[in-house]
Image 1 (cartoon, chains in turn orange, cyan):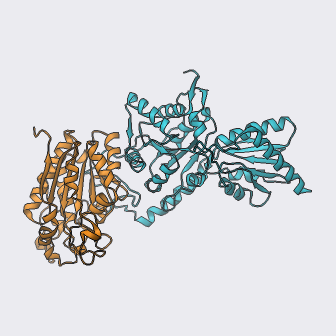
Image 2 (image 1 turned 90 degrees about the vertical axis):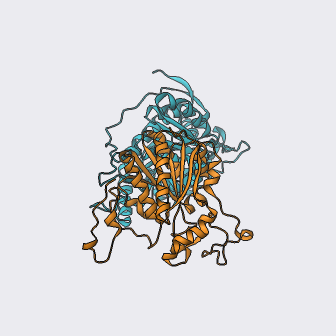
Amino acid sequence: MTTEPVTLRERPSGRMVDDFKPSLMVAGQHGLCAGCGEPIALRSVVEIIEELALVTRSVAVFGIGCYTAFSGNFDVEALQALHGRAPSLATGVKRAKPETIVFTVQGDGDMVNEGLQEVIHAAARGERITCVLLNNGVFGETGGHMTATTVLGQRTKNTLDGRDKDLHGFPILISNLLAQLEGAVYVARGAVNSAGNVARTRRMLKRAFELQAAGAGFTFVEILTMCPTGWFIETGEAPDYLDEHLAAVHTIGVVKDTADPG
Amino acid sequence: MTRRLVEGSEAIAEAMVAAGCRFFSGYPMTPFTEVLEHMARLLPDVGGVCMNAESELEAVGMAWGAASTGTRSATGSVGQGLSLMQESLSEICHARLPLVVLNMARGQGDYYQATRGGGHGDYRHIVLAPSDIPEAVRLAQLAFDLADRWRNPVMFLGDYYLAHVQEAVEISPLEFPPLPAKDWGLDGSSGGTGAARMISPIARNKRGDPEYIDHGAHLGLIADAVRAMAEGVEPLAEVIGADDAELIVVAYGTPGRYVRFVVEELRREGLPVGMVRPITLWPFPTELIESLATGDRAFAVYELNTGQMFDDVRLAVLGRCPVEFIGGMSFDQSGFGIAPDLGVEPLRDRIRGTLDNARKERV
């Protein structure tokens, strides 16, 4: 992995993301909010791709959400899908070019709301792709509305008194759902709210991409990300909020690993 | 290769494979189902892939993904299934990807859906409408050529009869002029170069690209490409009686075949009737019809709906001649849109009656 030198002294404003830009990021700036977890998650993805020397075989299929803006930052080939439909496009790429490494980048609104059947069918088929879910429990791009993964009690713009099971039903624990399918060989849930969790998530991503490269089956990494804007909290409070709310329900850890580790 | 007696669905599938189609995805719905069956049988033998998609939404998504690798790809369905695909079809047009979409229609109630599209945004796709199996074999191959040439989806509009009738036909690959290389196809290889490829309906290249094109400019370039396609694709049509017909009947697809038979029969009996059978429904043969709209001539439109292509004929005629609708709803007990009046005798009566009325109105 290559990193560019830190240029702290030349930047009176302090350290910038650009100072630590992985080589597979073509632009250091992004339009996402301060405190957003998605850039950390996506950075982790491209760093693992580089670490595993999969750069010239990889195709990223992006869903529609805040992270979509990031497709222009990747120096990895990208295919832009419709909201919810990324797993089918990824299937088409992989089946037409089996030597490629194909992964989706989707949010909880994209994958668990709009396109739930897509990810379930892709997993059941044992499609040799990796789906990466950036789960912040809220529609960030529309300004903080309830998704299918919003936890009970969470306040959003359309659940002002908090998600109520009697009114809005229960959150879908997508990793646990997918783990039941035989075609899914690896399912894990990480988070990017602490250095420890980022390191853990990177190990999950590495395992998922290694298994895809080995042709094992469907691999899935859910990454819990901070969304202080959509959670209506101070930026600095978001990492703790993630632990106390999102991760309290969507539990961090490897949910399933059936593939032969050898 | 020799002529064989082949059912339409099988002939279409074989023609697509002969044209180099190596990816097909579909969800069963008659009369599209039979093409799917044949593609599932044929493609593995030539190193291709046929996906039994779990829904039409997923079928079109898979074909979209495969097309983005530069692989000749196709999908398709029927009315309702194609309604589900519309969101993706408009995006695939905006992503500038070649894709062949079979529309094995029930009746002709989906002319608007085929030629206008039901998706969002400003887009067009070419529509080819054969009326018999030898023509279907040619157009299925032309569809892939046009899709690659214009980097745009092409719809192949068939119907229940075309899918199920058997005809003697020879299926062999057709020659087309050379095509530009698909240097845009995704395979991962441009990753890490600083200019990794991107295929997107909402952008043209990456933000870091020195020649970055923003969304508005991207849409402007699509509009230019659509204009070039509208002017560059040769409109195709079959014409009978251009010189002498007092009444020209316009019809497409299988009903066009019935109209051709009746018009030729009536001409042998000395009646001055003619026919225009549009083969490209988009671009529509507007200039051809416009050139025929002269003098005391009248036009009649026969289609199995309540009058959809009727609008395109009226736009071409632009009030120069009377245009009458003589078709009707394609509903019968079979559910496959075979209109009760799709027969030689009812058509003879209707065309003769329309000619008589046109002559009376002229007096």
